[in-house]
Length: 475
Image (tube, rainbow, N blue to C red; front, side, top):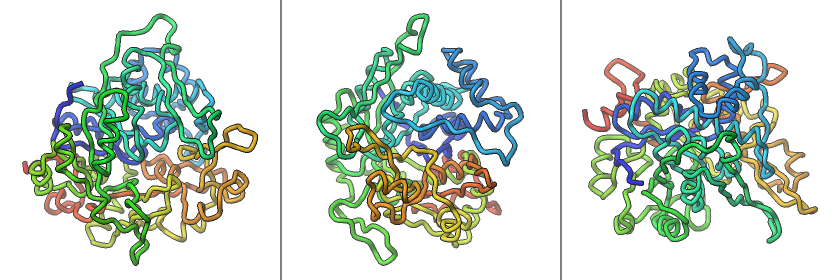
């Protein structure tokens, strides 16, 4: 597929932060709006339980091409007027290698809804962003996004060599497989996830779908070369994310060393060779600290098609950051009182993760002391082979006793925190416990967050997605 070459790709951030509304605004302005595909099944279920007060989700569900599936999701989660604030959200269950038809269907519908709403009212391209680390829901999620007409699939936090073939198969509604990393797997361990879209239909298959362009997120030119060599299917370009970007960062190459603050030390080996990227001949976008007119010009001069910008869009009024939290973070940044720390251990993925210091969130030691460990999101569960040959699932942020009983090691638990619950809280969908405890948020921003003042109009402490785009384009 030929890809349009926007100068700005809006990053796919957090869980629900880069929601359909933000992507819609960005795409309407001629840049690439991107929705976060992470945990969209959970996001949809919680939005419906909150009553879908504006009716956007129900409007998208009416357009879903398999009405019985849309109705089953409504029946399972929709609460007219919304649930009482003190009542916990209904759990949806965990994704496992064993097929769960309802969760698969929820993923298909949720990804369709998000992309449908992002595309509504205009004809410009819209993208969706996934994390390779969250492998098990990939297949039904990607299919749902394609069903809604996603133009671009972006994926980072891993080496997604299998995605191009999946896109090719799903265009024809054919079954696809996806290998899942299982700790201690043996040659006879079943580590493959299977999804067959044709089983969703009872009255014949619809017309072929348009294949989205695939843009993997990379942190080295050697990874780009390897992806092109190993992928069965086409790769249309790359997003090159530096270690100053928000969210998960690639670990430093070589042995992990920490600075005096406890952050990973990155060096020249962690800087992508752009001359090598230019020789590959595919378009690439630079991300991590490029959200300014000067850095856009620099990127273009270096041969990039443009830039990826996340942090500025996360903090704008059009994102789905919980409003009070977003305002608090922005005001702290503008006052020079906020810091961004590259935490080498906070994420159960094992990847460094950028965390902004904000009182009342997971960055607050007192909040961590008060929180009871629980793992009820399950997106970062690590599949492992048990002694009897079956597959188990564990997370270094779950209760200590449970993790250790599953073969986890004490050193793997040090510093880990529940990123799933934290990110859901940050986008305004916090789980409420039976005792009234509300899960705290976690705020992830890039190092460039310290420069958000450039987007604020004089006398204002807020800005919109339009302000971000016009500022970067020098308009």
